[in-house]
Amino acid sequence: MLFSQVLDSLAIQNGVGSATVPADWMQGRSVFGGLQSALALRAMRALVAAEVPLRALQTTFIAPVSGAVTLEARVLRTGKSVVQAEARLVEGGQTSAIVIGVFGRARASRVEVVPQPPTFTPLESPIDSGFVPGVTPSFIQHFTMRWLSGTLPFTGSRVSPRATIEVGLDDAAPANEAHVVAIADAIPPLALSMLTEPAPGSSATWTLEMLTDRFDGLALAGWRLHAELRAGRDGYTSQYAMVCAPGGHAVALSQQVMTVFG
Image 1: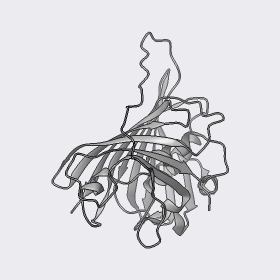
Image 2: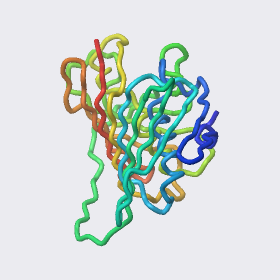
Image 3: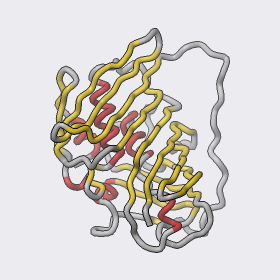
């Protein structure tokens, strides 16, 4: 089932909705985190006008989410420019994830800073990292990944990891904000390159800051994530990434707190 088809299956009314996520979108015991956030965004968009751009998406992953997803969305506040909304993924009466969306209309400002993608030393030959049944998470089969620089997972590196990874998403719908959410969360924890074998791990919190609201004509292949592990201790890591569209311009900034026990 394609990414856009899963989102379109979300039936929502008065802020409450449900969707069934097939097994090919699972990440271990839980629905792929990028899809959880995208479904929450879709639920919030039922309450927030499409012409108000998404500025930030803040997700706290609380518990595994099964394929039967129930969402509860509401608007927290509507100001002159900014609308803040919340969507919760709920299962068995318990909240499994909380997503806050910050939407804001453009305002005149003299502040304009355009982030530039970092330079990197490319590998002699890019390394494709595809779906391997029983080894990689199921959702990976919907993505293509190519390591342009950096160290692959489970290679025992002792250097603080950095990587540039080219990512594509297999989908038939035109590129939109939800695709950026999915692509930004697709890459594995860079901390895995410091290990020599698989170990338990997951995302705890994730903030995605959007730098644009225009995705017209963008392909869903050839995106680049310039990622780095900025800190790690006691099994908790801080991973940053700049998300760049196929043309090379930055469209989002990602910051995640992840657990990697091993």
